[in-house]
Image 1: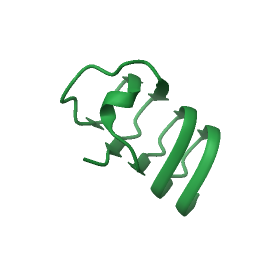
Image 2: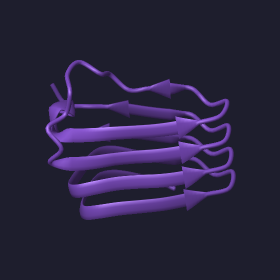
Image 3: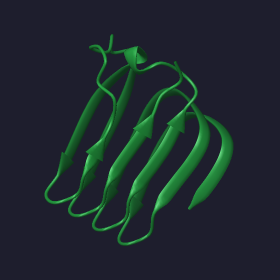
Image 4: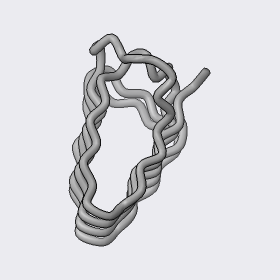
Length: 91
């Protein structure tokens, strides 16, 4: 699944082997996803400080900047077996 300039209240996804890629993503409340071997690539339109982040993976890589602790206004939660999780935040 791919998208560009997406704005939603909440977003939940599940994949066995397909990737999920969204550019210019705006979410009001939460983003969550489960994957066996698919990757998540998201470019969010707001700051990392707005999110509580939880990622579980067995053998996938996680690339999320952790510059500061989020304030819990929004949730970002991913679980993968071998898929990667890549998230970029706006400055």
